[in-house]
Image 1 (cartoon, one colour):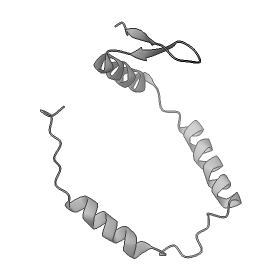
Image 2 (cartoon, helix red, strand yellow):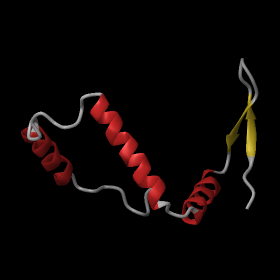
Image 3 (tube, helix red, strand yellow):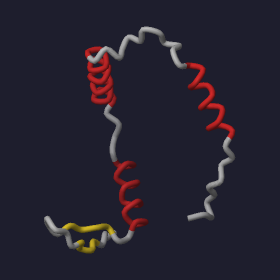
Length: 90
C-alpha cells in the first residue's frame, strides 16, 4: 500500500498532506490491529493518571452525585436522538 502526499505551500515551511484519506484510514486500522495490548503498561498509565487527579484535588470526589441530574438529562437527550448516519451516506 502506498500513501500519496501532496505538498502544501506555507509561509513557514513546506508541509505535506494526505491525498487519499481512505488509504490512510485503512493504514491506521491495520496499525491499530497489529498493536498488541500491553496490560502492565496500560495499568501504569491509569495509575499515573489517577495519582495526577489526586494531586490536582479531583479525586476523591467530595460529592460523587453532584450534578447527576444534569448528566441524566444529557444522557436522555443523547440516547433519544435518532441515529441518522447510515453506511450509504458519506
